[in-house]
Image (cartoon, rainbow, N blue to C red; front, side, top):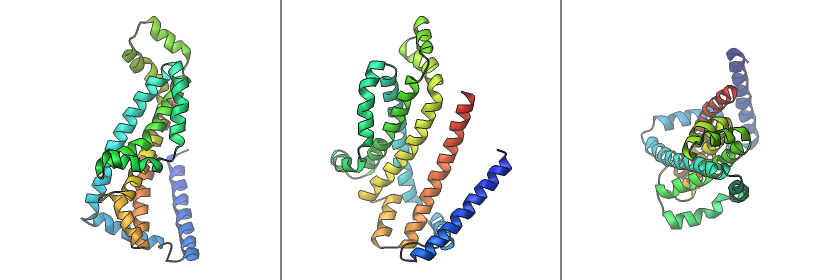
Length: 247
């Protein structure tokens, strides 16, 4: 697909979403939604407001710490379990079971352990992201050709050298997919953490808007969060496609 055709597709998608939003507003009314034009102006006003950016920075800082922990921890856990077949057979079902548990049920425990503040948001965000990264890493290593492992053993590479020069390059495409999903899950966890117990951040602003039933503010903040998530996911998806093409 050429760049021009892709641009036309994006424009058609934007127009379709805009029309769908207008029709949905006409059906639901101002008590449930705000119109797209007014929502965009309110989102722009937020971006120009000095009060907005400290909350955005608080969310960004918690999200950055949570992402680092989730991505690094997930990779380490995935390599530890995926590089050994027996460990993977035992550990993967446990990780899958933990991943399927609604994380919000664990939030009271996280609050008791970490207290209110950025630590709880970081922990909750990392809790969402670490499992998909680990599971995708285990799957990537499991799908590798056994010849690569045997070659590393013949060359007498130590575990670190094997992971760096053999396992990581071969499993990189699937690992990048796991990192993209873990990135999105960590963002979701961070925002949920701010919704329930926080005095700063975009999730906190969203909670205050919901308590006051300020539909326009709710829609504007949701639009800003959606735009950030969509742009970040698009960038990661382009990296993922490039890695898959080079594999």
